[in-house]
Length: 197
Image (tube, rainbow, N blue to C red; front, side, top):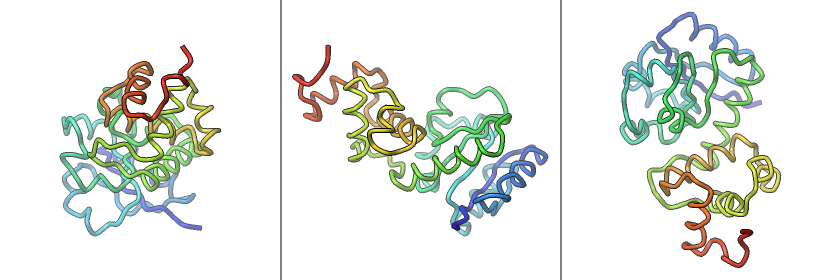
């Protein structure tokens, strides 16, 4: 069984150590625990991690509009937000997954696996071109399908669907279903005759 390598960036040692202990009993190997982001960046290239779990207080202190643009190292790993405080929507959108401090071990593991799966099958890119899978999801969204229906149709997890939808919104700048439907028609991804009005 593959063990995914995870780094935790959280100023509270009690929270970081507790999460690390919970993760190390399953499919994950915690290869580093950092109390601030700068220390992680100093050692990041030597770690070869699959995921970075970053506490919401750390994210908030960075005050970056787009963390992956400012820190390109994060473009090739799953970025998971550890919500220890109330989080701003901008920060939540940047993450591949969100772990709540009150989640149990099974929820945390599922969220981490979904985020890692999503980042490996569709790595983050600052490109505005949609991937093939994002185009598939966009067409199904434009046809009025719910996340669960899209997940079932494409045989992927709901978390992956949500991640694709976040990427689509980021790349197109469009968040509404109506706007995405128009975008799909203008880009010849959807025939206007197929749209249910």
